[in-house]
Structures are given as C-alpha cells and as structure tokens.
Length: 155
Ligand SMILES: [Zn+2]
Image 1 (cartoon, rainbow, N blue to C red):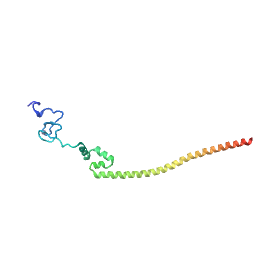
Image 2: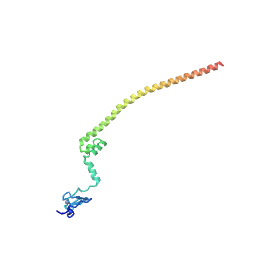
Image 3: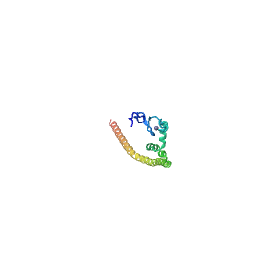
Image 4: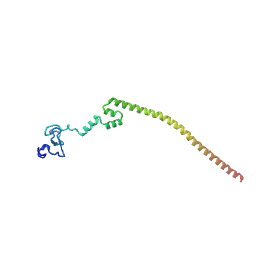
C-alpha cells in the first residue's frame, strides 16, 4: 500500500475539484470532460435563461401550475399537458363568470328597487316632520301679527 501523498489519484480533493463520475480521478469542478478517461461529466451547458424556460415549460412544478391556474383557470392544466382538463376549467370559468354577472344583476335590480321603496318611505316621514314644523311657524307668525294689529287698534 502506498501513502496517499505518493499516489496522484488518491490525493485529497481541492476546493474546486471533483471526482470523475466514471474513473474517480480528481478533476477540475468546471471540467465538462474528464481529462483522464474522456467521459463527459455533465450535459453541455445551456444558457441559464434557456434552462429556466425549459424547466418552466416542462411541467411538473406544482407552484408554477398553481400560479398559472390562478392567472386563468386551465392554464395550469395546459402546463401539466392536460388539454381537456384545461378546456373544461377555462370554459367553466367563463360560464361561471357570466352567470355571476347575471346573478349580480338579478340581485342588484330588486335590491335597488327595494331600497328605493324604503328610502321613499323613511324620507317621507322626515318631509312630514318638516311640513309640520313649517305649519307651526306660520301659525306662530300669524298669532304675533294679529296681536300687533290688536295693539294698533287699541291706540
Ligand atoms: Zn475519468
């Protein structure tokens, strides 16, 4: 047995070095092909944007699928390569949205009508109060005017 320092293939791995996946030789971490055995260490590099886009379009990421379906129902299903499910969700969402608008209309019109009736009723009470106060004021002025006229007659 030789000491580790004597044999180059068993020397300690440096910080920027890895073992070849095939022959186990210590090679540069950035090496694409092992200089010892010629075995490719990793796939040819893609630009990070390309690989990110590939990952994104490949499907299988639950977070991306959920976000896509949150943006519009069916998009996440398309991302999962489930065209039929996507169509069902997209059409279902559109139909549901339209029915919600119709439903809101059905709710809103009677609500406005009912509120108008209620408002007319309650405001009429206020108007009656106003009229009653106005009539009282008029009577008071009439009384004071007639009193003044009485005073004039006495002279
Ligand atoms: Zn190798």
